[in-house]
Length: 272
Image (cartoon, rainbow, N blue to C red; front, top):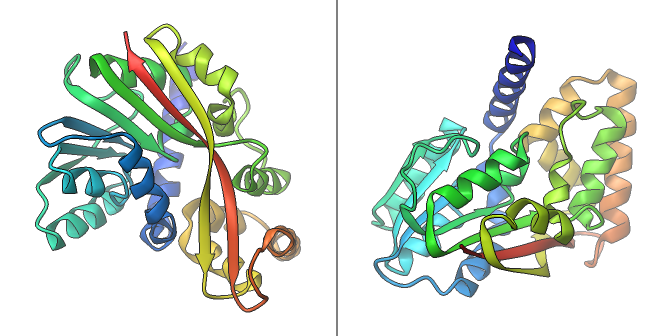
């Protein structure tokens, strides 16, 4: 069992390094509106205790705090947490941001009224532990909410292109399986008496063409940045060309800007 445990720890350390690389705050700005809309649909009330798991730079935590909730944000990447703290301070919002693993949350049972995660907890390597932890820290009758990229949506296709060049770790379920309704029901079904799964779209609107979007992600998005770093010059050129073609083909704007709609599955479960 020790080699397996060691392998998982090394994998999780690499994942942490991946999210520390680049500057995800630059990317997160373009999904802030979708995050605020997601929070609005949860009907969070003043005084509610809310946990944002894999909170990144605070795209969910901040709009929840604006509603008067008592908010905690948890993430594995200290640089993202620092950006989240700065954003909250700029709005004079009292939010606790702390380093924590979605697979082993450092909170007591039934501590939160709402436990949520957007494009975050889905990347943890052991989804069964994520499901158990999100549920454990949520009170009975509380809400577990996730937004997860779907396998067939645009972002799922971006991940598929990346997997052609950098194969994902063996034995680890694909993160986008959290975007399949039947998979979500299997994972959360033992903990919730009601699960609603609704396909939704997040719009990304970049003020530059698809070729520059690829450059932007290559510089600021940790997983893309490190994927390019692992390839030789020929591989980098091919990867960039495939990404540019995907962005260009799905672009709904004129050629001098890029507007893409990415499908995700909104999951709202009521804790048993």
